Amino acid sequence: MQYKIEHGPSFAWLKVDLSPGDELQAEAGAMVRQEPQVEMSTHLNAGRHAGIFQKLWAILVAFVRKFIGGETMFVNRFTASQGGQVVVAPSLSGHIVHKMLDASSRLFVQTGSYLASTGAVDTKVRFGGLRTLLGGEGLVLLECSGAGDIWVNSYGGVIPIEVNGSFTVDTGHIVAFDGSLDFRVKSIGGVKSFLFSGEGLVCEFSGQGTIYVQSRNLSALVGWLSPLLPA
Amino acid sequence: MHFEVQYNPAHSLATAHLSPGESVRAEASAMVSMSPSLTVETNTGPQGRGGFFTKAKRGLLGGESFFQNVFRASGKAGHVCLAPRLCGSMVVHELSGQRDLLIQGSSYVAAPDSVDINTQFQGFKGFFSGESLFFLKASGTGPVLMNAFGAIEEMELNGEMVVDTGHLVAFESGINYEVTKAAAGWISSFLSGEGLVLRMSGRGKVFIQSRNPSEFGRTVGSLLPARRG
Image 1 (cartoon, chains in turn green, yellow):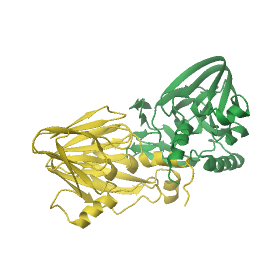
Image 2 (cartoon, chains in turn purple, cyan; image 1 turned 180 degrees about the vertical axis):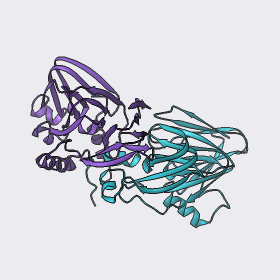
Image 3 (spheres, chains in turn purple, yellow; image 1 turned 45 degrees about the vertical axis):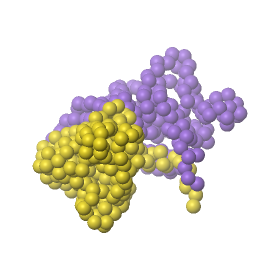
Image 4 (cartoon, helix red, strand yellow; image 1 turned 135 degrees about the vertical axis):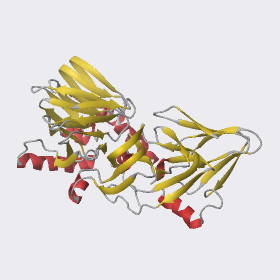
């Protein structure tokens, strides 16, 4: 399998040449174009070997997401028995980052930032905690594990930050982070700053690993647009 | 008349340079700035081409503004700068009189009078995806200015290609196309989030944009407060 990230950093898309036997899983609705021999099938995003409980969990999460806004609960899988090309793109302006996972590593991806992954990578929905739902900036994470490629997309530019110790990131600016990091979602300062600082919720990381941070925040765009809408 | 495009790919701006006697028609609201010597008239398309119904059809179905502004350099040369509403690139396609260009309604920006813009009614709306499929047909000779949401890829089709309707900007006439479901069944097409796709075949130019305006609208729109009333 060969891939190219083109048109970055503002409007990146991912172009993948599938060899026979390769499988690309992508966020629902991401397909831009594909060669006619590429086959697409749609699956519930509940993990590859999900039991009935995990599937119900995925549906519940999708239901909650419906209210706080976000991704669909479905993914598309592309295969090509004779090989073929498929192009996928995220919905917001920004860049795409590739990461290679090995069998022992995990990557947590903010659900809106998941673009695509290859066959062996498993994606499961995880909540960042109840408080994230109350904050409006729902930190709903996809836990990605298994050996393979993964592509995440950012709103705006993306900066990898190597953390050794502790580090704080606004939840709306998180793209992805290594599973080796511990994280805790909290409001910055007390109740007063939670309500008035405009910072909302932050994620406090500790340990060693990489965090991918995006230069724009979708909640901030929504917050800017909302008062301008006609009543 | 010639177009000059600057600031691609993110925030493009096009300048139409007019010699004395020349004019350019642009989508209403596209004007950014203009030379004081130019005259502007608002009309519903080139005179004598198509009746009211044709023009109304273009406006209502084409996704393009019903009214177009004509910028004319009568005595002296001048220029007018044009910009689309969304972030992204602009591209100029030169029509040679041989092949027409079919342009997704919202991607058309401007053309001189030597180019005729007509509505090709594609009576099929993406009722799952919310993407409407209406094309304007540009024929004649001269440049056509188009905008894309995101970057633009100009590809030479030779064979077959499946394109998401929300990512298609334009394609040359002579290419066969068929509107189909993205997956085999209706239910999985709906769940796949792809809705409808165009299955294209033949030879010719296809312009594709790297972002989908309706998808962006849904992503941001789902987070906005509900409209009252």
